[in-house]
View 1: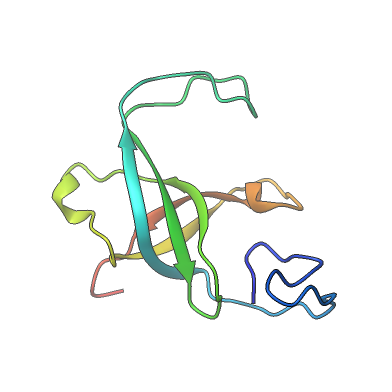
View 2: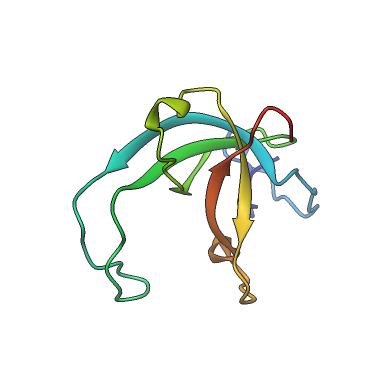
Length: 109
C-alpha cells in the first residue's frame, strides 16, 4: 500500500488498480527543521520559519512519504517515532497538496 498511490508496484512491476484507504495519522520516521526562509515554488509565497519537513509512515501504508510538518514551540517534543496527524487544506486538491502539513498528536488524542 503506497502513499501516494502508484500505478506500478516497485518490487514486482505489476500494475496496481485497487485504492486502499489509509489512516490520516502515523509516525515521524525522519525530519529536519529549516530556519532559512525561501519562496515556496508551488505558491510563490515565503515559507514561514522555522518549519519542518519530514518522512512519515501513515497507519495502513507500507511506505514512507515526505511532507511539511508544524514545528511546536517546544522543539524537544519532536522525535523519531512521535505520533502525527494530517492537517488538511480548506481547498480541494487532487494531490498531496490537500494535506497542508502534519502536526504532533498529544498522547491524549
